Length: 65
Image (cartoon, rainbow, N blue to C red; front, top):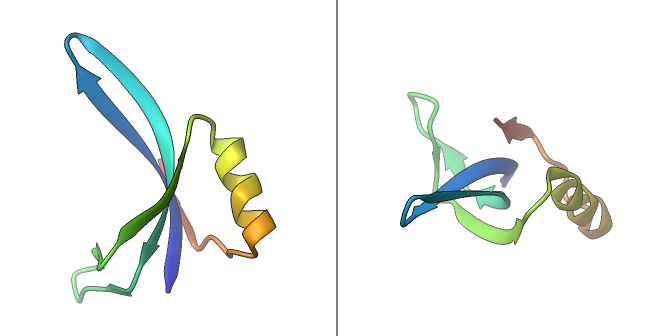
């Protein structure tokens, strides 16, 4: 499994909210795209996502900006 912390943006009626997702992906395609992913948890702060991974013993391989 490949674990990542990704920053996501949601747009709604002229506003934008940013959050971070801890995602689990099954594999990487031949062109380098992560596939078979699902979101484990959402956080408002990146540090909270990192703390969650540390508490659960998840080794984050990549952090997407």
